[in-house]
Amino acid sequence: MIVTRFAPSPTGMLHIGGVRTALFSWLQTRRLGGKFILRVEDTDRERSTDEAVRVILEGMKWLGLEADEGPYFQTARFPRYREVIAQLLAEGKAYRCYCTKEELDQLRADQMARKEKPRYDGRWRDRSDSRPGVEPVIRFKNPLEGEVVVHDLVHGDVTFKNTELDDLIIARGDGTPTYNFCVVVDDMDMGVTHVIRGDDHLNNTPRQINMFAALGAKIPVFAHVPMILGPDGAKLSKRHGAVSVLQYEEDGFLPDALLNYLVRLGWSHGEQEIFTREEMIAAFDIADVNKAASAFNPEKLLWLNQQHLMRTNPAQVVPYLRAHLARLGLDVPAPDLAAYETYLARIIIAQRERTKTLKEMAEACRYFFGETVTLDPKAAAKHLTEEARALLGEFSAVLAALPLWQAISIHEALNAFAAGKALGLGKVAQPLRVAVTGGTISPPIDQTLELLGRERTLSRLAAACALRAG
RNA sequence: GCUCCUUUCGUCUAGAGGCCCAGGACAUAGCCCUCUCAAGGCUGUAACACGGGUUCGAAUCCCGUAAGGAGCGCCA
Figure 1: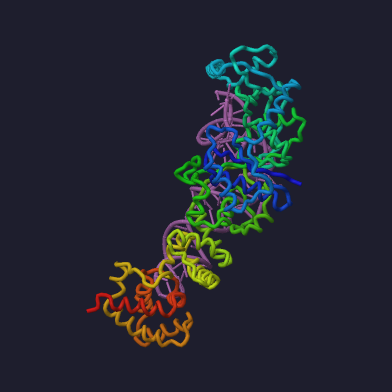
Figure 2: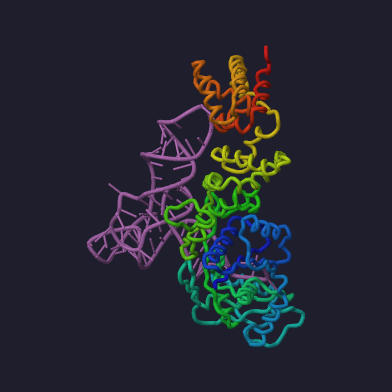
């Protein structure tokens, strides 16, 4: 069985870069029935925030990337790390280093001056004495020679020389463990078989492999996925894209659309652009992921969101639309909840091909709620002219007499009415639209009227006709 | 500076030596459809970073160069 994990650090907001890594890990386990673990790497207690943890948990839930295990918190595992450190120390695979920060800074500065790669020189590696007044850090004894080969599913084999690696710190002066060490212990303890993470970690991997080896653990398979760049090709920043994943919920995106967009960054399956969750699961393989970073393209996300809006069963969209209507104070369920939701589903069908997000859709739906409607002054001035209002007055009598209140019959009545007046359809439909929706944009007028119902249609027409009458 | 990674239309990508004077998608331009806005359909503009090799033949293999990125922390 394959085991993957998503291990975000709650020092910044979970954004789409992290989400895509999570998605890749999750997908890789779904097809083959593996296990997906969520682990919060919160060892940096200074910079970790509760808010960031909340975003991770809520974001993953919103996206439906539910973990099979966890969330684990590294801060809860400190005793275990201490235990492993003691073991390494006892086995001579780690040692205490009494260097002060000043000493290390000096060492680095000297090396830089000599144009060398800055690294710890191992000066305490073979000492067994101590230095009073200095709380020692614990360093891992990295092999001095040989090579480490990272077998990477996206990059292939990447070779590092051990001479390029130094003895990294695995526990700070205060005894707390550091990232590179915790990851190894966790991945070992949790039986992680596939480490899928951003390629900014590729350089850390050889050290981690050496630690896995020192602990006698099985070395997992790695897959370092490329980063996501901002639309301008620069590193993702707060100005574009590096916002909390929950922002996308607020902006009106469907989780599946966001996931679909992200899965296509660095991965493809023939010429297919639109994937349901199930299709992604069936087609995805981490080994097919590209090596190069890709830029985030908000337009394509928008397009995909609409595609999903148009293809998803309206009943499934209803709860999402309701959340956005609620934000506008428009979600007032009728006593008959089922009827209300059916009504919303019909609205969704009418609106989905002209709105790209749920937020837009909710805003475009204002005139479907409430009795009256506010007229857009410009639209009214242009379309509700005196003769237009006369037409509307006449036509409303036709509507009032219509035996069946259905789009088809409304459509026929409208056609006949316009033909009778020798007018183009637009000459009647557009004033009608303005009178009844307040603006110039809506679904086809027959559908709009059907959804509005006869009562509201007639009262709004009457209101429009009464407008500045005389 | 050193080590590692990356490089096909503006963007996401297809392409694993001849099927490619490079295909699809978003965006963009034009046309069609049309009661508005859309959606949809059709057509167009647009790319193999550069330089050397290898080969009958290279986007695909090799070597350089350039440009980006990452790591080199008692951050994760």
